[in-house]
Length: 354
Image (cartoon, rainbow, N blue to C red; front, side, top):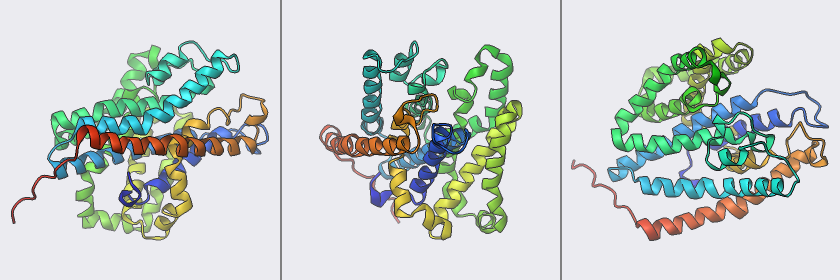
């Protein structure tokens, strides 16, 4: 999304999300003063809700402007946005493994290359973080088809039904498929509601914006309790597995969605100015490369010099910058040229007569 079309506050929220992941990974590495902090999964859940919201907002806007959604354009854009950086990382890691520099576990490469790492638990650190990217890719493959096949309205209702049913799905998975318990929280059916609630938010935001009651709730000082509830639910859920599956995860993602809506609407307020502060926005735009390339450096299991704090953090940032400017940005420019050449320019539908 170009700079002039960016949704206010989203990049700032992305920056907070990647910060939660980085803090989780850098803690416990040599030289870092604090023991392991379990903030990474919360950061990933925020990423998921943002992804669902952003992708659905784009799909709904396209459907409204052009009368339908072009799957060819969607997948072309996603391919050039995601694949080049992702596969550059995988090829480098695979090359290091073949050269005997690092060791991968059996089937690591197969699952990473096919975006199925979230169903591969016995994975090495080098590929460990690709589980969340696998969940997002599975969402990208499924959701646009549902929007086209069912229509936006029915698709949003379907996403809402999935969110409502997810606690029951997680409990059924836990008790009915005990051999798959270790997949809970990573398999698409147990974590996909984090993305689905973002889809629902995109669908209902026009009604929320028109609701005076919702405005009043958001303007109340008590709304500040929402992010506190999210954090408390998350940390209780770390220790209490069944309450987390049954209710706490749903509370978390609902609270995250509420905070995203609040941040977008009140982006001109004090909090909004922080979220839209240029350095924070810059970190947010860098978040994909930063998430992908931090893994080799923020490794608490390694004693190598490049895994010690603060060198590891500096190297992660340096490599992410190189990836962003040498891979991500050039590929986006290639995407624009190929889209114009292969698919041409779309003509908006005529607005209804007055």
